[in-house]
Each structure stands twice: as C-alpha cells, then as structure tokens.
Image 1 (cartoon, rainbow, N blue to C red):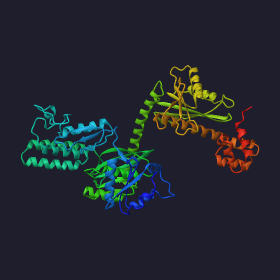
Image 2 (cartoon, one colour):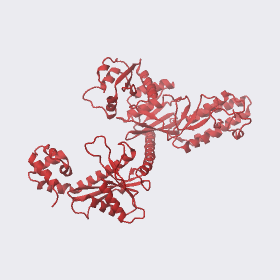
Image 3 (cartoon, rainbow, N blue to C red):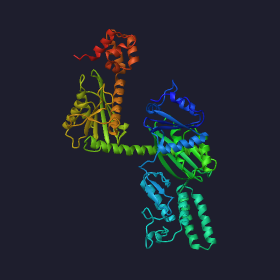
Image 4 (cartoon, rainbow, N blue to C red):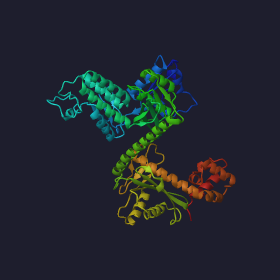
Length: 600
C-alpha cells in the first residue's frame, strides 16, 4: 500500500495526478486546484474513505502528477487522460453494446450512414445510442428520401457501369459511376449532421439559402429538389413537441441510480422543441450524484461539435462554474449550467429522470433474462426459472415455528406473492417435516412455481423432493437447496445442492446465478425471522428468559440490549454470553444449557 512519504514535495498549484499500481497500470486519475492539498487528503487520519477509494489506495504503488497553468487546463488534461487510459476506479462513460449507433465517417470522401454497436476513436461522427434497432432503422428510413447519401454497403466506392435503383428514385447521387464533386457530396453530409443533431431550424435556413441560390442561377431542377427537402424536414419539425416558449437550444440531463449502476438520459431541446433523447450508462461506486454527472459532462461534451447554450441538470455538481467556463470556451458562446427547483425546467428534468429510471429497469430486465437462461443450464432445470419461490423455517426449540415464502418473477421480487405460514402439523424441532408441510400447503393452492429454493442442505433438498413426488403433479416444479459456506474457511462460497448429485455445486462468489439465489435466500430468511419475531416478541421475552436460573429483569434487559433478540441469545456461545455486562460464567452456562438441552 502507498505511503505518504514520497509525496511530501508535491507543488501547490493546479494539475492532474495519477495513481498507479506496481506494474505501472493507471488506477485513478484526478484533477485538483491545489495538487498538494488534494493528494495529501488521501492520507489524512481520522477520515474514513469510501469503499472505492480504500480499494484504490490498497492497490496503489506510486503517484505521479502533472502541473498545469490553470484549473481549466487541468480539467481538459484529466479528460484526455481518462479517455486514453480508462482507469478502473474512475467513472467511465460506457458505450453500451446493446444499443445501436449511427456512424457517419466525415473523413471519407463519400461517406454513408451505417449502424454500428461500438464507438471507435476513428474520427467519425457517432449519433446515439438509440433505444432499439428498430428506432435506428426508422431514422435511416426517414433520412434516406431526404438526403441522397450513397446506400451501397461496401466500405469503399464500388465501380459500377450504371447507377442502381436508388439513383432512379433520387435517393443517391451515384458517385459509384457518375462524376459527383466531393464538395457537393460533403454539403449533403453536413446537412445530415445538422439533422441528426436536432438542429432542424438551422438546417432549414441553410436549405432555403441553397434553394434561393439555385433559383437565381436558373437551376430550377435543383431548386425544386431542395424545396422538397425543406418540406420533408418541416414535416419532421411539426411532429416535434414544443416544450419551451423561450425557443432556446437546451440539453436536459437526468440521472437515476441503482446499486453500482447509473443511468443518464439526455433530452435534446432545439429551438424550444423536443427533438430526441439518448441514454447512457455509467458503472461506478460513487459517494454522491455529483461524481457521475461531472464525469458525464466532461466525457460527453469533450468531442462534440455542437454545444447548446443551456444545460439543465437533475442534480448539482461541484465544478459547475469551471465546466461552464470550459464549455463556453469550446463552443465560442456562453454556456450556462443550471439545476432547477421548480417551473417548466423542473418538469423537463423530471421527464429526463423518469426516462433514466426506465432505462435502468430495462437493462436490469435484460440482464436478469440472461441470468435465468444461464441458471436453467447450470442447475439442470426442466425450464427457465421465470417464477422462483424460496422457503425458510424459523423457530426456537420448536415453539411458535413459522415459515416464509418469497417469490421472484423474472429475477425481480414479486411482493404480492410473498406468504407467511404458521406451522400447524409439527411438534418440537423438525425442520424437515416443517418444510414438507409448507410445500404441501403451497402446492395445494395455486399454480406451482418453476423452481423452489430451500434454505438448507442436502437433507432439506431430499425431503422437498419426496414431498413434491408424493403429490403426483403433472408438471412438478424443480427444486434445489442452498446452504451457507462452511465457517472458518474464508473465501469459500455458498453451496448449491442439486437433485441426483452427490456433491454440492460451488460457483464463484461473484457469479450472477449464485448472486440471484443468495438474494432470494436472504430475502426469504429476513422475512421468516421478521415474522417469527413479530409472533414471539411479547410471549418469549416475558417467559423464556424468566425461566432461566439467575436471570432477573436487569440481566434480561442487558441480554436483549447487547444481543438484540431472543433468537440471537439462544444461538450465542458461552463466551459471547459472558461478554454481556452483568452475566457471569455460571449464569452464562445456565442460559446456554437452557437453550441447547434436548426436549424431554
């Protein structure tokens, strides 16, 4: 782990710092107004670091720094270095391979629009990502008749003896066999760029100038063709929703968070009208919304040819003034950044946030679908486990025994299907019989799930299998069990028991299928314990502890205060009980014996 000794002579001015590991790989890049203060803050005592930074510091071996003349230069350099190195612990904007983009290679003489899944650093223009392949194809169909870019799918210009049908339909200039000036073709490329950026009013103004010029030069055929283009673009503008009477160009950016994933949606308002939206995802552990939003602004606008005059955010950022000044310099006009609290702008922000929430939900659903397909194969199930139900038993010496049933549908909790059971048929401690009772009662009512997950080991699984077989169902559910890892073996994962398999299935601790099963198991256990405590709180705290020799009101309060509840007291070892103030060895042994002796 890095020590503070090598960084005593860091300068006081602005700049960029890089944390590197032993192999020289860049772990984290940051900028600072004062490098000395910022770097030393990582080593200040008495201030706990967030999980992300703690891990980074553990892996870091050296710190390098680059001094800049101004903080704005540090901001630009930070962005360039993050783009080059893509450090593990920085927030990095992901080009989601699940979403298609439109590519326009402006460096080629006669470029065409193509659909791609990944953005490359090749100098081409990328538009998107679009929410679906049908959305991007719809955009291409809209552009095709208006702007006659070439449609052939070859990388270069093919050599043809005569034009194809697109030329006859006036949807292509046919540079493959006709003498088309590069300047004329690039003029159309520029118009497509304006159209895809949502700058339709600017595009219409440009087209009108071309039409008037053609008319003055008596080129009425070209003037008529441009007139038709204007009409087609104006129809598109008519379908766009007016959301602002200020007639400004605005980008409205909304952030939604879920675990380590952030969804960011940007709504494009051009001339007061909503012209489109794009969604992005960011993976990072952050402390507040400022970090992913700042990262998004720096990375999204770094190579943008067009920046609107106003950027509206859902959450405040720390470097608002600095980023605003940077964008103002890059755009050559005043660019303001605001976080509205009410009014029309707040409504726009709420719309962007709602879209970001929906995007994250859709991503989660797609991910869960893939996990369920993998679970079917890995767990040798008869069907994809779209509906999974988990079962757990909670009891103390067999008294007031209860069970919980938790349902996950398509990998997500379905709380309307959660159930609690009071055990009716079993006396004393017999988890196996209790599981059999719950399965029988559940399968006698309603459609069976695709999969039962039992909290327990191989014996619990065998009982569940025999119970299901005894019911003679036409389409019986699959069943597995999951048990916690053996104590005293650090790094081991929970064990999954499958039918007709002697040894448990052991998956990596971060395996998505194991994570899903553990989520279900933990939710089932939480509900079972919660229901048991609800039933037993008054009865047990007033009776069970009072029956133990040496435990009076004062010691009872101490036990409950330090160990939490009766179930925790019952599971405590003698050493743990002696650690409670007022509990000596004799009383600790009495408590332990009371809860661990076999019932007569």
